[in-house]
Image (cartoon, rainbow, N blue to C red; front, side, top):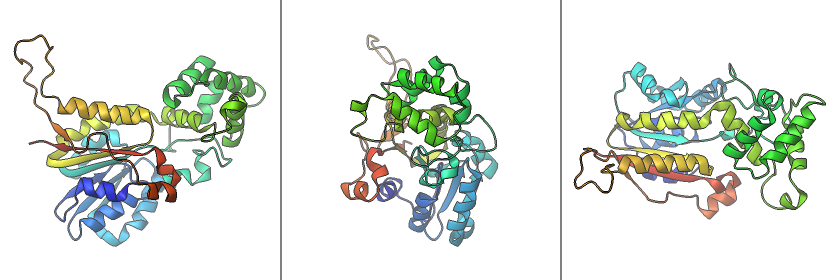
Length: 305
């Protein structure tokens, strides 16, 4: 996704160290390693053990230039400490569920394929989407679907879920998608994306605590970037994109004193410079080739001296 644009922002070179915080299928890491040949290095992170194994096969040709670590990107500073890396030249986040996970029906991320209702990026622990839909009170479900999915029919969907789970536990993606579809009024599901898209997004975010992790991870990037190094974030929905935009804005502020102060007393200096205000969106050609790209937005910022 947005591979050319990511490379334009990161500007990989053969002496750089780059972190791919969302390794997934290793598409971005592969291109960064190619662009930084012969000496550039990539540290790839992923919570998913299966993704790490698949990425290791794809990146095998680069030898020890690719260092793969299973872990949560919110722990980036600690991971770099363990590797003996103080600062890096670039950091990339490609948020949300990866194509590698989405295309695997057994992971339970897709509303288009019937599978166990899981949605965990790390399958070795934590609650599943089935746990949430079968155990949470209706009001808690409504809040999750409304807040994380920005779904206007969150209340109806939560009510339908509670009613249906009283008959039988909801354990598959297919059944949940059908319940959500029936909960949304017919006139509102005639056009646009699948009616279950927002609900599935909300449950995935809740299961993996994605927004909490993103907030921690963004703050962990600043001190780990060399002066002139860049952080790039690809977001796919407004909640993530708003968090990134607000964080970049906060890091670019020169002063946070109240406006009525006669002089600055906070002593704050900007830490980042936004590379392209407004962000970068995919070309029409990329969206035609990959419809999943339609909601993507890339934002990038550069570490100031």
